[in-house]
Image (cartoon, rainbow, N blue to C red; front, side, top):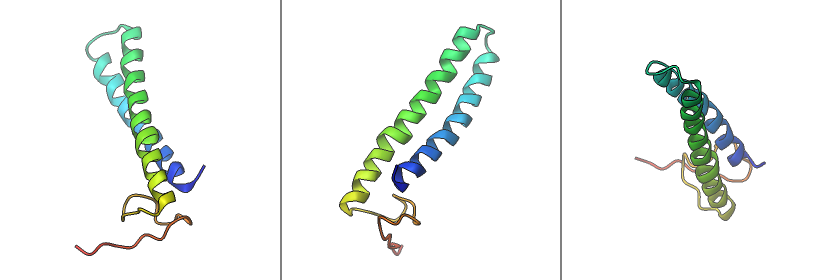
Length: 88
């Protein structure tokens, strides 16, 4: 796994934990149907993983491989690219 996908997977994991917990507690406040709680929290976790790791990670990874890199797109410590700061 390259550094771009590694960073995307860490963002996806951390975001999924937070989103899954918030969804879990929001649904458990409304109902005690465990199937509904698990499916709502699981759906939120899967949606975050697919969007963060799947779409964003693969998109940024392909941009890094082609050299089309902007500040903030990929980790600055990545040995694959040299990120230059854009003056505001």
